[in-house]
Image (cartoon, rainbow, N blue to C red; front, side):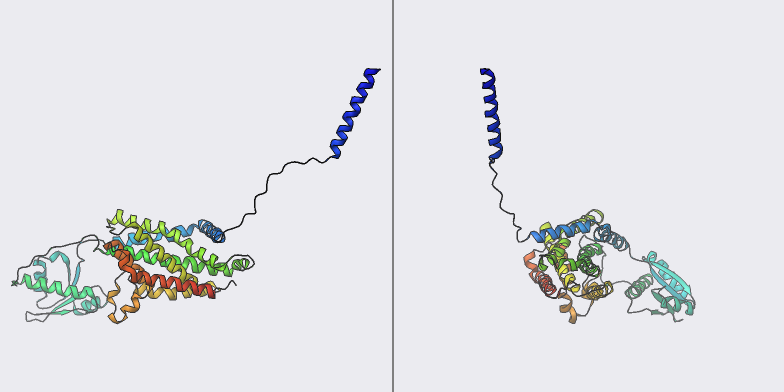
Length: 387
């Protein structure tokens, strides 16, 4: 009986302890909470830049136009204007008295392999010359003399006249009073492809900035995508700057590919440092990014931005020395040509790549690029509209 009473007392004590434990709240030690994370000043910009890069990744045509197309263009022009013997001079000789003698003299000349000669009637020769089939027309006067008919506005016609006359005079027995010797020279840096590749770099940076930024902005505005950003705490400057610098990242790959292509396939000699070339390319990308932003700051339709971009780019395509030197234009407009951003970029790239000119000696060109990019970005920031 005593054992039973003792067991009952133990059970009652345990039950009372368990009920007390249920009624008493259990306090647990909690870990200190971390302070709320604050975004930095440039966090919005970095997220916008990452989003922009992801958009470019989803557009496979960007890879072709930014990377592949400039290489194909350089390859085509490099093959077309590669080093080769002089072009054949196409000569038409008017049939008549003395035509066979003129043809025989040209055939006996040391440069006879450069001439493609046809003896034709007067009407056929004149028509062929007018249509560009012949560079020069020779018409004997019947008294032992010859009449050259050429077009001074066509460089190939002027050159044909000089070469044919020299060959005829030499074949007829002319003796030069001064002994001369011809030595051909075609060194890297003086060829057309060496002049072309820096121009293609500048042109492609301009195209990327104008079309890649301006066209994309207007497309986003037309699809009402920009309107969604209005209700966010995003800064307008961060958004525009992220779009500009997204082209800067592509520029590094773009310049590297085109220069490596020129070195491997056309044996270019790059005399400038990689740092100076990359810095010029980055400054050029930012400059035309700013111009592209300014061009697209108010345009609302694709047709409008297409016309504006062509209006801005076409003069620089013609005057800024992409495919030929702007020295061909009158001297009076050279200051205006040099004030264009593409001219400054092309001149700076050629000086750095082909001559190894330090950046400090090119500060006027760098100033032109910085002014165009800075002023364009400030104006775009002021005039930009979301809708």
